[in-house]
Image 1: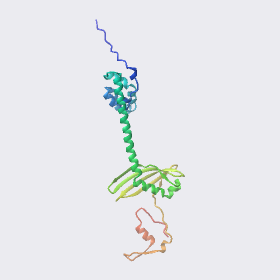
Image 2: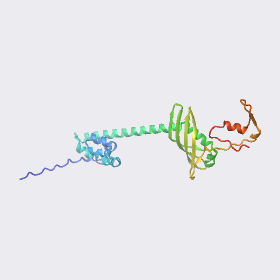
Image 3: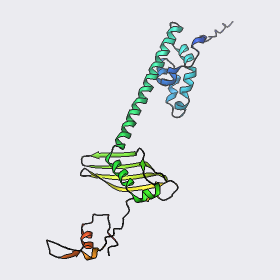
Image 4: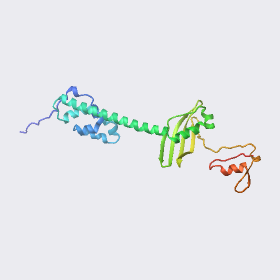
Length: 244
């Protein structure tokens, strides 16, 4: 005659602990290891673990922890789980503050960078930008990167520009050489227009009566017109045209 099988009935869950577990929700797999609830390690599974398991642990964590652990009493269980919830809140608040300080420092450094100040000044002095956006032109917080090493550096920034007539986005590429910043490209993308405006394109310069004025070179004693003199000293990238 065979012996009757002994059926193990799970210990009932006290109603006062059958509630949302904030420690399990906030610390998930860390809480699971500390409470012998290793199903919480599923939180480490990409996508599924991050999006679903924290909510499953928050809803069922108290039941699993009660059955998997050794507790002196319900009061002991509630005290331990409260500590887990407090530490979870402290860690998450600390992470939030750390990220806020980190991003705040990045925004502050970009906003106060010489590259951004130079680009904003050039934008506000542009006649084309004034025609499209109106005046005054206000600029928003920049986003991008600024790297500086010694006397050299590089900056790639974008920021918003707003005026009475419209709004747009500014794209900047600037370099630093021998401690001095200069802009390599400055483009304005106005809302409602497909093509961006190049704010650094070559401009024509007109000098009235330039052909009548003559300069003498001290080195060669040769004569040259003002147009020739200007062409010889014009920096690279700037053209002098329409000289008559």
